[in-house]
Length: 106
Length: 120
Image 1 (cartoon, chains in turn green, purple):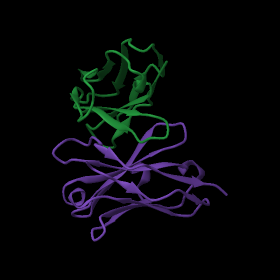
Image 2 (cartoon, chains in turn green, red; image 1 turned 180 degrees about the horizontal axis):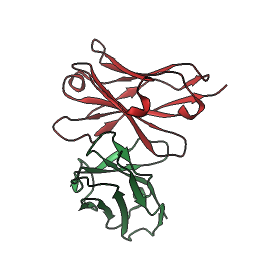
Image 3 (cartoon, helix red, strand yellow; image 1 turned 90 degrees about the vertical axis):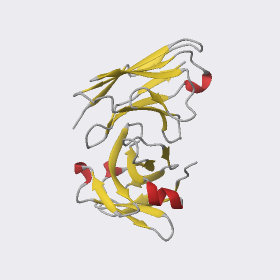
Image 4 (cartoon, chains in turn blue, yellow; image 1 turned 180 degrees about the vertical axis):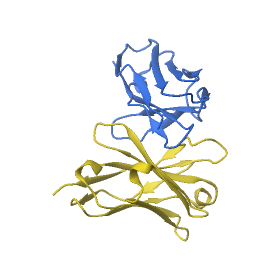
């Protein structure tokens, strides 16, 4: 099983600032990685797939990068609606696994 | 826009079984895979398995093999996830989600979630 590790657990930022979230995999993913956003009481929402492709309706302030085992989600200028939990997910091999999440808070 | 509508919350006793349903649309059933993912309170996401509704093929995470069964009823475009021999640590929100087979298993849309509480 591929273990996904996200850091930091919590990221405290101010609106308008840049946020950088990290995701590390226990083995190479060949960029088979997605990022999801989850708000309290809601289902997750796909933001980024294939490490760097924005999903439909994902604002361009969200960008994904990385390769092999190290991946990054960057939010260029945080808006109030971006304060949420973020998860990475690998789709390289079964079982599909998720990171533990990073909470982005004000 | 994909829409997935799940059944309502359930309360079960340890050792019992639960069935959660997920109603989709016709084109979902013909073209997509439906996955089940769960989230324990305050915890992360755990993939349980998937079903290809058009053919009924299933694949389960090893963690749930022998305890979970995923089925579907094509006449009403509804997928089901049955989890047996429930334990207290099965208390979670259970989500159905879909992936387009032209992409890797990225979950494009999700149901609203079904809370299953296991308590004596």
